[in-house]
Every structure is written in structure tokens, then in C-alpha cells.
Length: 462
Image (tube, rainbow, N blue to C red; front, side):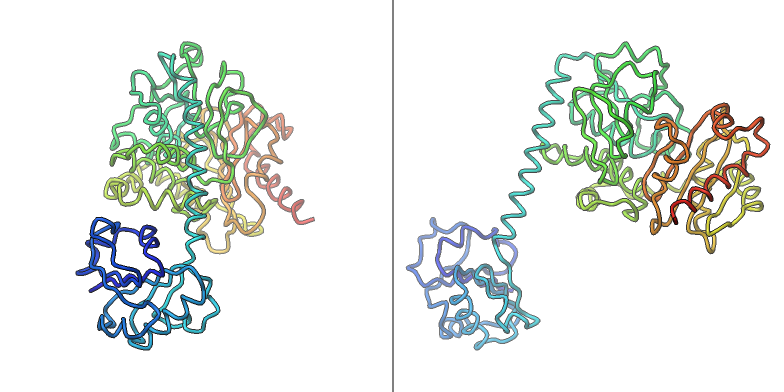
């Protein structure tokens, strides 16, 4: 296969990528005097001829298995070059780079494409502005942490894959290690997939006591915001998150991008902008963080999530991800699932079920994901009681109202409820739940939850 490059002027050659090595032969057809070998931007053979004359293409014996790039400035010249070329070989693949010739009927041929350089350059420049912004933000973080002996990277209680991966990415961005930038949480990691992620990727999450937080020079939050911790958190110096802003909070640095599907995407962009290479462990963690928070790019997805996911995909260990995300169900989970499914109720296309007291909180969201698959269900609301707290996981198919907005309306305390369009969570002390719904006991807890959600959804329809 040959590449035939035909520039209207030789200086256009310097705007092309290096084609050497992509074909058996690279030929430059130029009207100007042939430049010296040292004058070419890359290796190839220069042939003198009129780019707008058919004779030049006959001399080159253009064949259907060649690849031709026409580099032009004006639409008129592009049309003349295309006419001459196609008169010699009507089926050769052609890319016309330049000249606004989109109305030319010849461009409708299956073997001809048109690329406007301005669009390519414009996109590249926009990307560079974004990279510069992320590097500016990085410099602010590094100045903030430069003199700090210890930087605590704090996640929500029972951190999920997005939080774990974001913490690892932030530590990498800061150029620190486990000793100087530990990853910590005020709650244990309980969900099977998350436990597997920690084990297989060799992560370490320190279980912290509230009183120990004051001992760190810098506290950085990932995938969570300060109001989540209430009065437990003495301060927050850095915040990275993609969840909706729950309340006003001040800290020296924060990057909250509500339109993004994962915090892992935000931190990945920082690493890319700073030219930091992803090793397999980091790429695997970040890819799984994006995958789990967006349901494999199926919900709450931004173009940035797709772009970063595509960049990370060839670098990650997919066999390891399969081991992480498909853990075996233990007997307790199976029994809970069976009991809950037997008594589930489908009301107004909402699948409700209550697990009662559970020994593992992660059973609740796992069952919520499963219940959304029930025939006729457009929502699932699964509840349970864990450590004297009412936990409710909500899932929706994304076509109706926002699950996050619904739970925030039903449970106004920002420390209690929140989420996105397709998924939301409520975590409220039993005592506060009883007070909110004027209950004397938890005997009617399941019925109260059903009534509250059905009433809330009916209000949305009015």
C-alpha cells in the first residue's frame, strides 16, 4: 500500500502526521521544485507534477489500494485536484484536508472524505485550555500541601470503588506514599466487591476514630463533601467530588463537577494534564471506579467519563476487574435475598421490599440493583436497619424524576439523603426516622417507607 500526499503548497506537509512506517511507500506529489531531503518533515519520495492535472496521477499509476491525501487551501483548488485524481482512478480512497468543499457532489462518494483542519485544531486548542486549567489547579493543591508532613485522604464511610480509586489517584498526583498520604475512612469497608478491590489491588484503608482527624496537617476529601460528616470533621482543606453540592462549605480548594459521572474521571484528567503515566494498578482502579459509578457508562455519564474510560481501558487488568466485581454470595446474602424477594410488592411500577435488621449494609444496595430487573418495575426501593440506622437504597430507570431529588425532598437533612437521577441513598438514625414520621416503634417502618415514596412520586405528577 502507498500513501500519496498531494499538497497545494509544500508548507502544508508540515501540518501532517508522520506517515512513514504506516505504508510500504510514501510519495509527495508537488508542483513546486522538489525540496531537498533535509527539507521534508519526514521520510518519503518527492515527485514533481501538477496536482490539478490528470497526467501527474497517470504517471504515478494510481491504484484502488493506494491512499491519497489532498492538502488544500482553497475550495477551487480542492475541486480541481479531486477532478483530476478521480478521472484516473475513481475508486481510490481519498481524504481531502482543507478547503470548504462539502457541497461538492464528489464528496458523497463512498471513497472520499473531507476533513476541515480548523475543526481539528479548534478541538485540540480547547483540550489544551482544559489541560492548563487542571495544571493550574494542581499547582494550587501542591502549594497547599507542600509543607504538610501528613495529608489524610478521607472517604465516606464504607467507601466505594470510585472513592478508593480517587484516593489512590490523588496520592499519585501529590507524589506521596501511604505513610505521608494515608487513605482513611470512619467506617469499615463491608461490600464484597469493595473488599475484593482492596485485596486484589493491594490498597490500604485505615479505619479512623473521629478524634484522630485533628492530628493531620491536611485533610483531603474524595467522592464526598464536608456536610456528610456533620460535626465530626474538624475542617476540610481539599475536596474532590462529583455529587450534587449538598450545602455551602468553605475550604481552601475544591473541585466539584456535578455533571461528571465519577470522581475518578476528575482525578484522571488531572493526571493526564500533568503527563503522569498510569501504571496497571492505578489504571485498573480508576477504570473500575468509573465503571461501577456509571454502571458501565449506562447512567449519569458525561463526555469526559467516556473519554477517560477509553484512555484507561487498554491499560487496565480486565481479568482482575472480573474477579473484583463478581464476588460469590455468602449464605446470609442469599437467605436475605430470598426472604425479601418473596415479600416484595410492586406498586405503581415501584418494587418495594424491606430486609429488616441486617448484619451487612451492602446487602441493601445489591438487592436494590436486582429488584430494578423485576418485570414491570421502573423504580426499586429497598430498606433495612443496620447498626440502629434506617438505610434505604433507591434505583430508577432514569426516564422519570430524579431519585436524588426525591429522597432529598422526603428527607431534608443533607447529611441523611442524596444521590443522582438513577440512584440515591438514605441513611438516617432510627430515632430520627421515628421522629420524622411520628412513629412510636419500627413495626410499621416498611409501610411508612412505601407511603412516603408513593406520596412523593404522586406530588411529582401534579
